[in-house]
Length: 358
Image 1 (cartoon, helix red, strand yellow):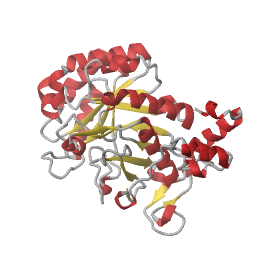
Image 2: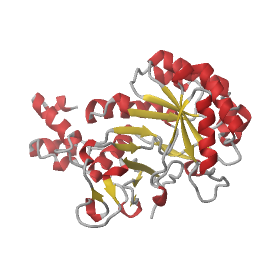
Image 3: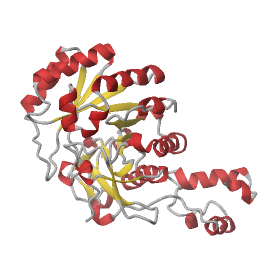
Image 4: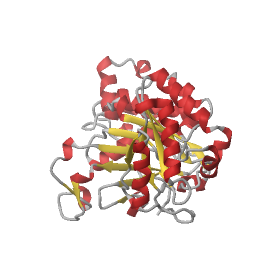
């Protein structure tokens, strides 16, 4: 884009630093002091912007474990829909304290902060059309797709807020990434090539859209794919995930295998545990056998105990039920882990994002 201004190559590098370098980046073109004033004015006059958007301060929250939620408003000038991003730092890096030393006095950084991870959970859409029965975003319905710039901005805003580089990005916020694939792919490439986040440190979650995995695989990205199963049989899955009636679970598993063969990148499976719905030992064994047949010892299930959402008629299973479920998976030879709940007190936990304004 800068070729039209006949500037030397190093000016391109300076603009890049102003956009992505944590020590030099700015939120608008007018503050790009690395480049001459005349070039700044020319860029502004031609309508160029950085794509940076500040979160709504009144709606952003920080939990005692350091998990922070940011609420943004779409910037297309036509709609004012909201979307959310969540920063999830290693909780060992924080103490729930409001004394001096923390960012803005909200929490205190402790030893090891620079060496530990900061995960950005980002949204790809405002709202979601999938209407999963346990999810706050699904209650909203679909509002609009986010641009690649709006997706990348979420990561940069979290880095600014935490004064730390994001180490991992998960597309597990609002929306179904496969229904906004073009912008999601653009965002992943920018995060990888410009922001400097390794492709293998990026995970894209999908509930399953027919033919989408094959299309996504052709982009040859290094990211991990996380498939949201939430059931071990078709009947139960359709009750939890209405869109599943268009995508049989057997085909979903087969497409997941094909994705792995095409990309060489592992596929993980997400399973939200709902009391009395999909949390029995029998269902765990059925799930384990299905995944073991398809992936051998390479299958991994992230077990997610449901987080309460107002107005949704589900219940979180007891700790005993959760561990029995995982034990049954292990007995079938399937690796599993229980996702620790983070950000619950500020409605920033998995399944709670609803784009709420203050």
